[in-house]
Image (tube, rainbow, N blue to C red; front, side, top):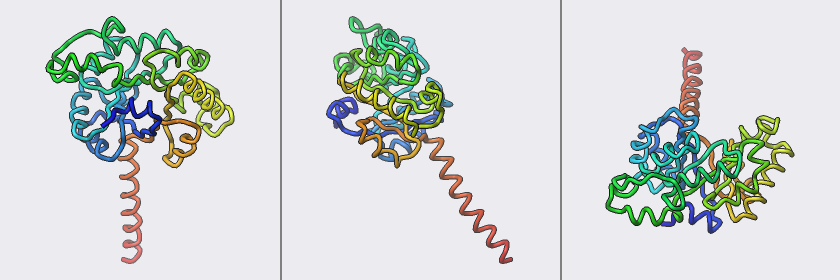
Amino acid sequence: MKGVKQRLKEGELVIGTFLSLGNAIATEIVGNAGFDWVIIDLEHGLGSEGDVAHQLLGLKNTGVAAIIRVEGFQRQRIHRVLDLGANGIMFPRIDNADEAELAIKAMRYPPEGVRGVAKMIRAAGYGSEFEQYRKNIKNELLGIIQIETLDALKNLENIAEKEGVDVLFIGPSDLSMALGIFGQTDSPLFIDTVKRIIHVAANAGKQVGILLADPLELKKYYDLGIRFVACGTEAGFLSKGAKQTADAMLKTKELLQKIN
């Protein structure tokens, strides 16, 4: 089966969701739901690096690509989750090309990067597949840069041109906040900004990603040219499902009380 990075290069739409609870069982359940990829969120999520190994084990037999959103572009934070077996890294709040370059270098071994070398890691079969893993990093590990600040927009072309940046990911909440129109994703300013990001990415041979508030928005953004699309979190799925069930039971309870 082709990896997400290769599928994106071929222009395929790949869908995913965020995991914010840090729970291995919830991760496994979502992994079996039919998504192409998930993002384990270490920036805003409840989990920690100590939870990631268990979550990756939960995804092992699902065929879903596991991407980790780290807290920053510091080398130590990045190579630790890569060693555990992440298929890609999402970098939040990257403001310029220098930061994007540091982020990508942290994903790669010398001479292309600055990642520390350890052979006995889960990602490399605990040493048995290290050479193959090392050689395939460029072709398999996905580098995702979030575009969510005014500085990132100002430096957009230079960020997109950096080798190893595969996806420019739009965070609607942060980006709309930065634009002064928080939550107004139907605003002409927001839509024009999204179109500019897509145009710049296309010129650089890169893809664009976005987080949807509603799965019904998928066609809208697909038609604009976005191919890496997320919607929801496992916490949201749990909350929504629990609320729907409780509401249905409460309505029945009220009817029974009226009858009695």
